[in-house]
Length: 293
Image (cartoon, rainbow, N blue to C red; front, side, top):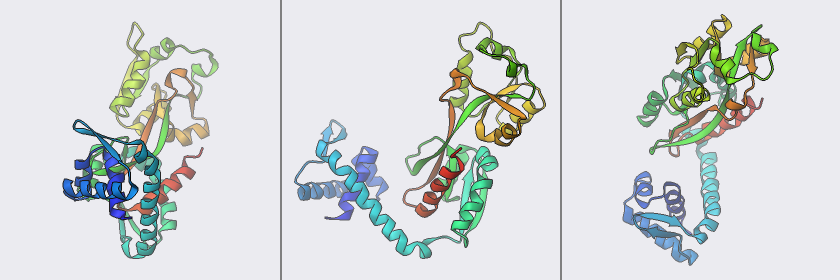
């Protein structure tokens, strides 16, 4: 069985298109079609049905898919194991958003250095769009960005950071039960505009009120928002990682609200397809340890 035929099958299923798979594999569309036809002859079954301009994997294809993925993964791991020392760069260039730079990188990089002691690390901070562009243009090797997908990059979920309402030490809410959204809306609010969708989800909590929430400060920087709350300028909805130390010290206190359950910031790791697999695998494993609590 030809490994390239299996690779074509897995890529077509992932991208939902013969043309897109051909583009990613740097092949012509007829070459990809020929590989699938060859694999279908070997398996004696049809793997895809054509539906107008689209395609759909068959039941036989669905049954074969996990085995095909496993074959490719096993091959790639074996190849990496043999060539790892030759293929590792001397410098790993990492791009990340400000929140990742502030709250994750300082804990992550020393652990990564232990796993890859001979690697030097170059860190750049920017917006999600900036980092995506730098990865595409090969100015950085790995990017930590908001939950986005790009056709030329692989994007893997790294962690989710729950958003919660935080108040300062001694705030009147700490002695009250059954807080209403009206109560919260009347307080001076510091709004951290963490991203269009996330900000809208938080803002929608106040959508049913007659009066708009009392937003006194609006910032795109979580450190600024946090420090304003610490100065008792207001209360704020913030990602939990940004206030980890202050919560542990009791200077900031989370207020649990059913309305904010499920609202979180997702961070993904992006890279060019097939690149830096050993680093990404190590980062994901370390992330499970760092975000276990």
